[in-house]
Image (tube, rainbow, N blue to C red; front, top):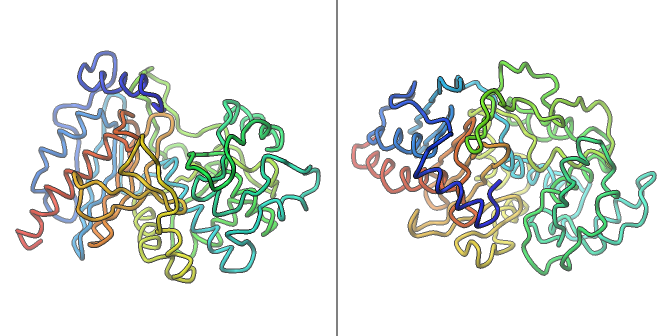
Length: 394
């Protein structure tokens, strides 16, 4: 993931000089459902510019809805509207919804210390790194926790989270924004602790089944043929597609709060229609799953990204974009970066216009912390395609 200026510059260079990376065919296999695109050539240019390997996109404005499916042949990524994608950090919106439902049900609180829950877990010692941290801090990335370099290996080795926490607390809770996958992972541990169920079942019972979503946190029961593989376009290694991560392929049969801290930051698999249902629930402030006042907390600005991305702020599991180059309104949603994908799920606050984009690989270049692919997609949709819909009466 290009989180440093040097790595980001490398991705931008590969956009300009596409040597040694897969490149989409000049005329990709593409299906448009629900109505013609007025600027389809511009969309194809966007796919080719960012080396997008198979994608499912949705544009929606009012009652008008268009789905765009693209497939690549080398490497092969065949996409249908029912294809499942691992959506990486888009999972955080679902995690926030589940956590707020738990708050609504009296199982958790937003502003009490999470140690009040964890101290009752068997074999869970007093953990100084968690002192003063609340659920609100975890959901807004203001817990002060950094992601240790050993996070992925600890998850693969099934280590309990107290083993990797020493040294992770770098600022006081509530003092600064610091994006933390570990922090969001701990929300899954909290949900298991209060419900006494595997986190995958908590999500299914509270969120997936009520919204009729085809989604899961554990891919162990899925057929690989259902899942669009992820291919990292830089550095590209033919035949090294990722279909299931080691964590995702592991069955979750029983709750284990000390070890199930890897699912709620970015492990969700779903299809495009299910993502649309999730986005509608978030956009409508949690309706019909929780009180509107709690859903409003999810959307409200809780923290600023700071100088590295002055146009970005964060709610609870929700990215907020205030960029006049894209829209005069705030854009809300989330993006997902992991193993080479560059997913995006957004809506425009004042109009409700929705843009969803799932893919099997794309350039991970960024504009600040916003994916450059997502920036270009939003600009194309909001400044070019949607205005033409209005003019044509679509």
